[in-house]
Amino acid sequence: MYDLLIKNGTVVDGTGAPRFQADVAVKDGKIARIAPEIAEGAETVIDARGLVVAPGFIDTHTHSDGTVFSPETTGYNHLEDGATTELAGQCGSMAAPYYGEFDPSHGISREEYERICESYTSYFAYVDSIPHGANLAFFAGQGPIRGKVMGFGDGTPDEEQLEQMRGLMREAMECGCLGFSTGLVYTPSVFAGTHELVEIAKVAHEYGGVYTTHIRGEGNQLKESIEEALVIGRESGIPVNISHIKVIGRQNEGNSRDIIRYIEENQKAGMTITADQYPFTGGSAPLISQIPPKYLTAGKAEGLRCLAESAELRKQAEWSIFHEAHEFESNIYSAGYEGCLIAGAYKTKEHIGKTLAQLAEEQGKTPFDACIDLLAANDGIVQGIYFSQNDSDLLNFMSQPWVMCGSDWSDYGAVVDREKKYGSHPRAMGTMARRLELIRDNGLWTLEDAVYRLTGMPSEVYGLPMIGKLKEGLNADITVFDYKNVRANADYDHPFRKNNGIEYVIVNGKTAVKNGEFTGVKNGKVLRMKRER
Image (cartoon, rainbow, N blue to C red; front, side, top):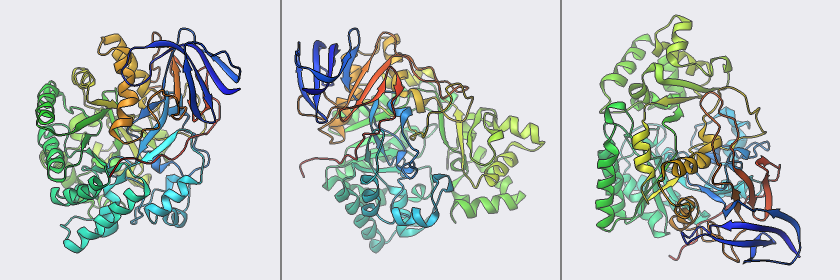
């Protein structure tokens, strides 16, 4: 007898091959059999008539490495979006190794955080010991690697410091990381030079890793920033992935065409280049990361304290945002204060759902003063949404065969009131559903190709051969969905609404989502890259 039997469904197996009608049987967490008709019994039977049976979706870009510390974390938002695996540790910001930065919103003490995150070895021991909603795999964030060796500030590492960084990267890869990530607009990652990144990339490449990067500029400096990523790829040999590829700035609309040509030229020249993308035109990042990094060289806490205490320093920082965008592109510059929406403020929740312009008007302050005061009141922990993108470039990138899908968000805890207003980004609940919806409604890809880029492609790119495809013997991570009716209902006003059409989600053989709702099952595992060295 099987543990689970999915009958009468249309199987799209994640390889790009044509769909076919079949039953899928699961036993002991593995796909036991796929056949036109399976007569044997099962403890649980799902009738998937009229539905697509696909491999579990792989969310190629999350930040759930920072949400694993709370036992209340479920990841239901990703599960109800069809994702059975998350690739965390993105944008250079993995939780380990600890180098002095601490976020009190994690829900544990600084001492406990430091103990868990003291090294990659201690962090992996911790995450291996606890349950997860979806499977998790990790990148080593370059920010903590640099921070562990050089602290918060700028500067060029000497050879001894570079060797320390190489050693940390080796430890990360030995622990099973997929490669390393950078967030070249965030401190301390932003202070790294190209040579420093090449040296780290060489180590990751030795182990078969991938370099995934939040580049230095996604607006006026987009092409130059991608070129730096490709230089790192050329000089180290490492495959390159551009994180959440986009064009920022209304004045830059249409630049996606030039970027696509440029990437394809380099692919034809022999480079391995991919990208991930979230299907929304509002971006999101911590508000403090929109302050020019040169004001945060002593660390975020100290930099914020100085800005809060000095009106003159605030004037300098604001002037820099709007007049030195060539040096650092802030989303405040791209979106304007009226386009910066407060999505999270853990101590002053009454400000959530307002723009910086609205907050300033209410408080009778300049917008930048309101911004700094908001950050100070929340220990620097404020999340913003920035409206500075456009639909045409989003769809241009989505149409490319080398672009995968990532939410750029973290796991939630207990299920939130579906009608709650504000407080998050719709990509947390609806990234996969929204991508499928846009592909279907705009005729961008066949169903088989759409599923491949959500499943089989990321499993190949990141060296995770046991997931991403429906094949006998592989892990039983399965998403059953109604392609004709799939729709993301979350929006910027109501970011917690659940999707239509994501019916069942199976993680390692157990049902985590039934009839579109999280069941409470947490059966995810920590996955590690497997490649021949």
